Image 1 (cartoon, helix red, strand yellow):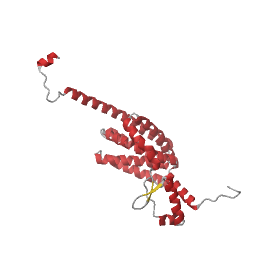
Image 2 (spheres, one colour):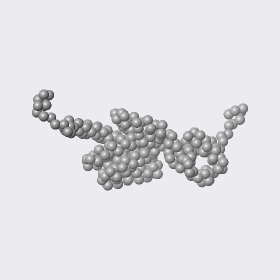
Image 3 (cartoon, one colour):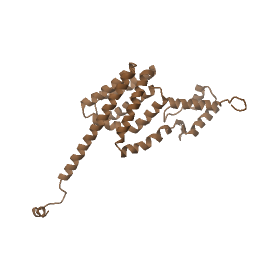
Image 4 (tube, helix red, strand yellow):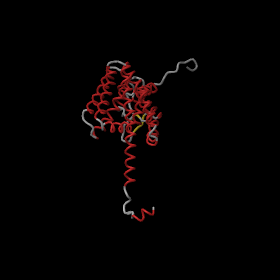
Length: 272
């Protein structure tokens, strides 16, 4: 308030605030294309000049951007700054994966607990739909094509749970985290599919998480996520041991194989 007068918010600021809210809530996701101006203006009940001014404000902030050929899109700026450095860090320092998994456990256990308490019927429908895809893929075997789809379905299931927690930070942090660990999940699934028993355990863990949320049982949902994360942690350790054994076996084979074109005579051998 200045000079005793109430400050009146510009309509374009109100519109911009509404779009920011939709981005934070996850209604508008990175890469989403906005509706044509005419449709958005009609939906919001505002004039196109006011809408255009609001969109320009968001473009200036870096939350929206225009692409060649037309269209306005939600930027991935909120995620890129977080994920880009971590891709390289994980590749160069595999031990960080254990810390990342520990953080994932804290985040997802709490998200599942909150989702069990706060999920709307629409949220439950979405989580149920993503779980149905996950379960269907588990039943289709472990071919490379199925595995690729399994990774995407797995991420979609956990992301749906995070968004059902109805805390904007859970939704955005989980989405960013999953972009970082996509390759990590792929490697773990490739390792687990070698054993039918492990593959079935993984399926049952996802079912337990879904049932805990569907039954509105925060404790059961959180415990199911914790069991799942612990299982993944152990699978990581087993994979590391497996890769170490294979590395040693390859080294032993190289040492046992004589160099091509080199013959060692008895006299040479004796001289050595």
